Length: 420
Ligand SMILES: Cc1ncc(COP(=O)(O)O)c(C=O)c1O
Image (tube, rainbow, N blue to C red; front, side):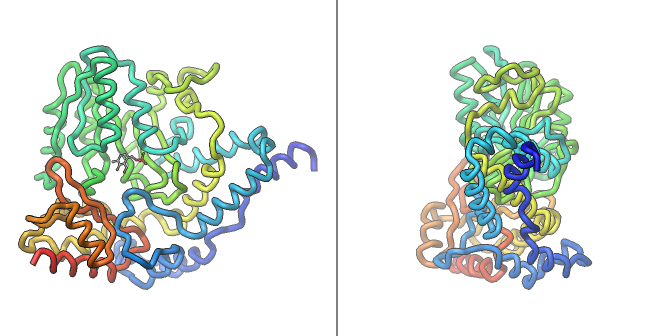
């Protein structure tokens, strides 16, 4: 073996893992003929998927929105990658580190149908989106549009550019039960002025699970000369979409959420022709202005995480994103349809199947969200998170592919009892 192919083989150790999800492959092969919508309610199939997860028996985990921990096999791969990178040391870093990173970027790009040249692997959504907010060439008086229901880290960074550059931030408040898409498009349009440069919109609002009509909002904003940055923290690998269908300028997400990649992995997409308009946070050396790597000079970092992203993608591809999306929607609808309309129960997520994925939010009138979360955990061993934000007071309920309808029955019966 010559030196180059030896180095290549050593460096590819982690990538060349044998087919890692063989059992899952067999399980999925047996249901290939089924429509994802029919498979969504097939508890036997999803129980087999559940078998891939090491679940803590102390409580029912309905808080996967923070992050979706890895199935056992991805976790084992991560440990193996850590071992092999550590074994090779600088050898790995100096030979195939970048080649491998590029492979990962290609695979991540494939999920949303864009090119790797438009993708940077980041640590999370916060890094991805704050890089854009902080990297715009702001002038005093420029305006940005966002929603009260957007995520705190991004709202804070807009506050920061307000203080630093004199940007004016304008807010809309997204209704939990919109009449139609036009109502939402008009809402965002109403906040745009001739000074607006950037509009931020959630693909899926994290506190309610509502999916917004991003393409329609993008078209409206573009027609008024405004760029659009999409917060895709909860939509990526949760619902199936392609970047060209959205036509947004910037998109950020966390891969440790619905892709179930290791903690500390994220993605930033920037439309090719916009890359050279963004100031990097940390400068890169001698790269062309439209080279995405300009925005992503992070120095030496835990590269084994990158490698495990490939395993997470393989796991998701084996299940099939369409099947996963259908199951998550089914689970949400399974419990919300049983509690909607109960006295004192307020569901803060639209019922329309096109306006939600797996996330739902429920409150009980007269009970503080934090008390409700405490009570569910203490008396029913159900783990959720309390949300107390403008227009949204309740518990965010985020099941995952391993969640059973039996677990959701426990949630429904707890809500019935507590609201009675
Ligand atoms: C809508 C939304 N945006 C951004 C983030 C930030 O994600 P991260 O902490 O992975 O950067 C979250 C986290 O929950 C979120 O829900």
